[in-house]
Image (cartoon, rainbow, N blue to C red; front, side):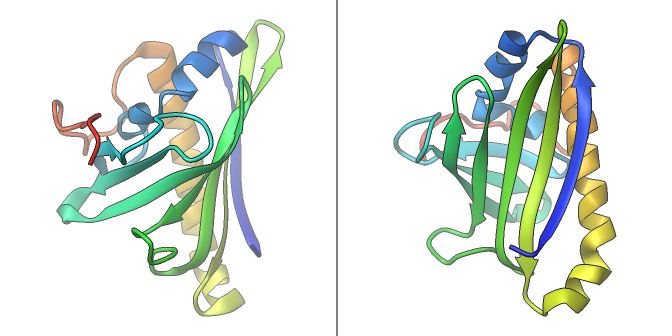
Amino acid sequence: MSAIASHSVLLDLSLPAAWAKLRDLSLAPHYVPGLTGCQFHPGAHEGVGASRRVFRKGGQWLDETVVQWQEGVGFVLVLHKASGGAPFPFREACFSYTLQAEGDATRITTRMSYSLRGGRLVEGLLGKAFNKVVREIALNLKAYYETGKTQNADLVQGRTLNSAL
């Protein structure tokens, strides 16, 4: 993949406490802007192969499947639309979350690696927007993990679905 957007923040949580929250893949709608809920695909809810469908405003959806999982550290999700590959405008895309202990706190790094249809010109045009979203996810995650208060105004309470599709 040719482009990367990354942001890192310090969480006021121990590494085990941060990992206990991060490993729960159902929590994403509480801190990812625009999500209105999520639903697991049949199978595992964590580890390599765990897969979820996240719902967005306007009835849009996206599938995310764990392709790497490092217990206590983080994971990588591949973004796709069912079995049809990456959603437009992506040629391919993945999102990773990585934790690292820093004293009594924990640093989390959110990172999106991607290539776009249209190549480097389109990546140049959309790069700032992707950087902004990745930064916002990290900051919202920090606030949600530390306070327990949903940071995503688009999440309709009670709409987050944790059942299998």
